[in-house]
Length: 412
Image (cartoon, rainbow, N blue to C red; front, side, top):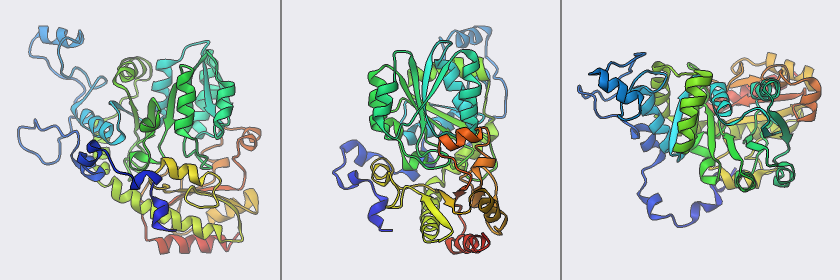
């Protein structure tokens, strides 16, 4: 694949003064948000492992609760370790404000419990992560919220379906597991014209590869369990939005509804992981491109879903809103469900595991694993076939990943 395919069409255009003066992504990932108040001069920020914070006087405590004075109160409301991470992530994503929570699902539920009520409607794309699908269809609907699926690959479908009851338009791009791409600019314009908020799950991309807020989205969600942490040793979620929306999410969705508070230790681990995010994502992207090319050349594979392939239906759209194409690849095996299981069981180096974005290459069978909350009929309707396999390309040497995939394919 040519190096030109890794760049946005706009990369060659003259950049604004603000862009020229802004420090690079890796520099900001290392230095942004740093609290310089540590009295001992520690290079690595300390971890504030405390549930509560003492006040100098009773009057100070009252003033903080009344919002008349800044400062920390209780770690469910804010913590210095989390605050540093949130400032860093807001900088990287280009958002006014950030909130970190205990899991990706904690991020999703904190947003929706904040902004929807019985009688409201949300419009969601047809392909979603299995637990997100279950929350919308089997959770929100129980509380009187109407959930309707729309094929958002075509913005005209949204324009036709959106109504004055629509409060949120939600989608993943790329979508888990089949890599569908949604035009963030087009969908955001339609939704905003109708008075609905646009919420985008950008977990597959990270702030390094895609910035939905710059393309018109209102709220961006990440499962920080994945690439942001990057080492498979924590659970966390991230919400990014305007300061106005975040005020409600923090003090309603998180404080009062979900209580999905991130631990300071996990916040520290994410901050550490972010220092190498640019380096890791480049390697993930390189390896995924090689995996996709290998699979496309195999006679055991009928279809490869990877936005970086010219054969991918939405390749040009992907190029217009991503800087590179990510570390995720999905593909269809000719033998269906049984072939998928044979392939997984034949792996030696790559690991059979759900999740993604780890140093290890992870392979899973969505129909029986991550997307099992869908009924068989729903999976068929929304393009999650029995023969679909999902690969999270890891950081191993590419030749070793490819050799393992080749020998596993030979057993199918």
